[in-house]
Length: 497
Image 1 (spheres, rainbow, N blue to C red):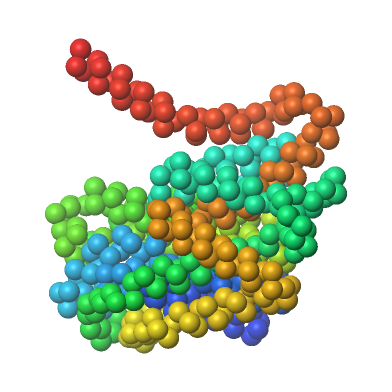
Image 2 (tube, helix red, strand yellow; image 1 turned 135 degrees about the horizontal axis):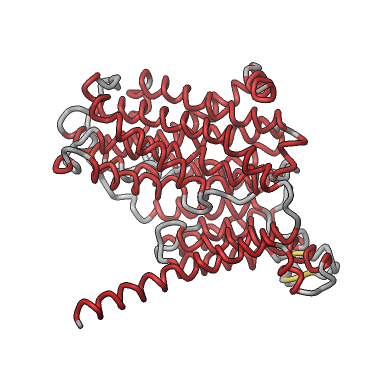
């Protein structure tokens, strides 16, 4: 409790509170822009955090993550175009409400539900992360290797694409993590004689290219699209009747969002869609869903912000990203020289509780912004793409060049921008590649350390019970779809016979 109060007090300093306020407002701003998601913005602004203190850097990125998840609901409701993928389910009932002239009511419920879901997840984060870290404190290199392999096995569920596509992208990320000099042998790998690749491929240019530049290229193919916009006077606090109808939906969304967020690789979009389906299933009025049901906004919005805190649990406690955006936050930690994991709770508890407090503050800030500045944020949708995306490209080039002042990083960014655009055109999410790049280094380092401990004998893993359990869970995760299909076929044969 003392550590939490100390962390909260550090956020109350004018400098850090200003950074959280700026990050939240930026998150809401970009979340309300179709195409500019929270992950894109976090990747784009990651270079700015290099000069910040570790607490300020992660508080800034975390505030963007929180704000963008709410900001996406603004365009989802007003123009039926989610600004952030996590708001996709919100559009199903938010836009019909706006079409009936109730946009203010829809945005008010989105703000309140998002805040309640976010606060619930932060409370779970405060309680669950130290417990998980305490369990993981006895982890050695073999356990971390098994955990990283388990994280990679979850890549098939990332991004909504087919499992095979996601696994291929994740394997490509792991391969990219091997580029550069091997610190154990001193041998350069896959550098092709290019000096800039000796230190490996940097996180910043890869992330900026995959998210910002790829989105720019994708938007350039849709410049002539026109969308219908509904007017907004002001957001309205939900009425007592709306709260009565939506209380269960908010509870379901908050719990499901946090639980799904904790699972590596799933994230806010999956949480929102699953919560929407569950809320509709238990609703007394399922026939209203898709036509303007207020519960259809409350459930997904509570879920996508609940997933924010949930996804930070494995990221901070184990160093395993809980989502694509937390993979970027994890990269920000590594750039700052901070290694997530159980040791962090013993060595820098105030740092972690300051991050928790910043996320709590971000949720309260975007509640106020959503209720009192909704009309201003709605005007963001009027910014022409002809002005927006050249500015994004300019910021991308500066962001890629600035950390190392190397043109090689700019070229890397442009190459991965084309790769990201290719991924989008073929229905492949860039998130598995990012997570493979982040986890690849952990896989390689922990495996080498394990084999040194075991005197180059793989049989040494048999004497590590926790590692064996994690390997078994990994195999079960990979085999589950095959076994389910086999069970369905067997059931169909029995039914027909």
